[in-house]
Amino acid sequence: MSIYDTAHELARQLSSAHEYEKFIQEKKKLKADRANSEMLDGFRRRQLEIQMAEMAGQEVDEEDQEQLEQIYNLISTNPVITEYLNAEYRFSRLISDIQKIITDAVPEWFDFDENKEIIN
Image 1: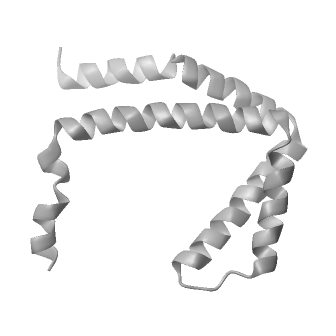
Image 2: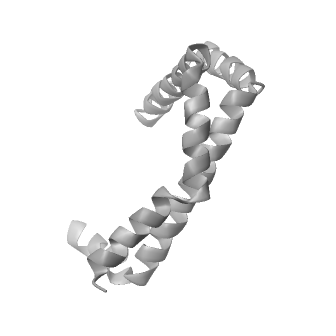
């Protein structure tokens, strides 16, 4: 079996994995309720804006932080959103674990210490 065949087999297994099926199921439930979907999208958009501002060295207004916290408190009590987020996390964790397995197998490819000398 070629490495590409193995990669395609991994892709097939991922698409039928319990974690992925659960993620799709919960995503459909979330998207079925426009208010829930918009609430989560708004939270994520606001969260990203605050993170980008912080990364750019800008001071984040306390009112913005409080607003984000209020939205988080609201969505964390919503069972449809929390089930979606849990399923998303579990599938994301699966992908991360697989990525780690692959990158651990080829450590020279990701040897950033070696590249520091080139950059400096």
